[in-house]
Length: 243
Image 1: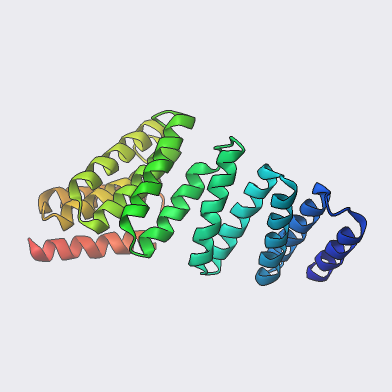
Image 2: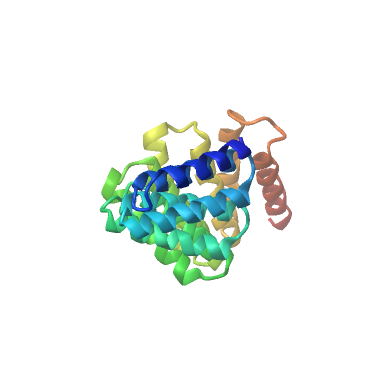
């Protein structure tokens, strides 16, 4: 597949004019094939060529798509500094193309990179942008809105902002219960995250209740040795030791 992709790319470069959008498409397809075959560095090179060509010919919508692919692949490869740059570029290009369908995912991923880098103000900014877009696209009650609320709340928890963390986790929990019903893994995640907030803020009685509710909900969907259950049980044991 990798050899075929390279031959396909070489043929496209010979056949298509330098100004043809088909050349950009061919380079992107070659990148897709290389990525699927596990040749990640070749895929990165092909995507970069496709992005550059799309920008040269003013094909903004395709440039946005390829920049997003580049960012996702670079993050997967652990190259977070480069991933940050291409996530930012993809967001700008999608905005220029008046397409916000990928904004929430891209802004959330960028926020995650900033959080891991210890850049909390930038992390918060991108999550808030993602949340604003998700609400604008889907309304207040939607799984994507709940997911962004959850992720931002986790960031607030790590920053020690218990009030904002609790409010956002409660918002996520309410959405998830309304959309999925009470017995759902996403509901269990929100319950567990609230337990962590209460545990960290020394509200031990509430923490115990939410840990137990999360465990009960997870047990309906997970095997007893699932990592989520192990983590919850460990936290509950620590809580019992304190109290």
